Image 1 (cartoon, rainbow, N blue to C red):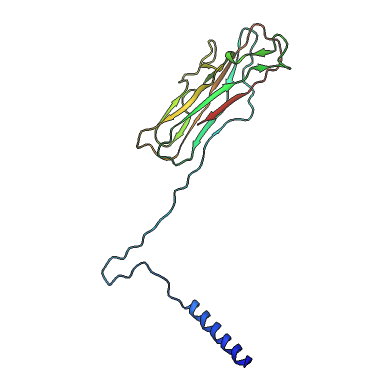
Image 2: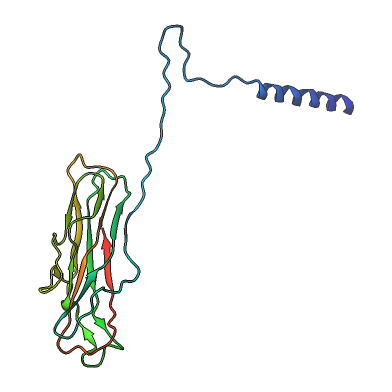
Length: 200
């Protein structure tokens, strides 16, 4: 009795396996000869982030004496808008700390952000549609005077404006000129500060 049940089970399993192996694939439709037969195809367009890339450290090419100017290019700043958006507008802003030597607490050891000037100039490269607008248009000339915007308050570095047809991804790169108006009261030393960019 047990042998019969075992044999039946083996036969049933074999039949099930054969059915799985020989099953006919499902089709969306069957068309007779000469009739068009359509297949609907789909895929996704993927979206990324809105991001900004800046240099880690920069040593300005031109040092300055008290009453003069220190200045130089900050290096490539790039905004990549990978959101695949229907309205891909954005604004990049820039701000500065004071520049100090030592602790910055003693007389002559701190240069305020109001003496730090930023000039974005025109884009060096762009991709995508829309209008790319520099915060401070070219030319960004070496001082004197200091070209650009003082960074005692956050300033627009670059922006991207769009019309209804200007959809999808885009990017912009610029190389701003940074100028420091060195106060007459400044003492000798290496001054360090932080320039901060953000995009939204």
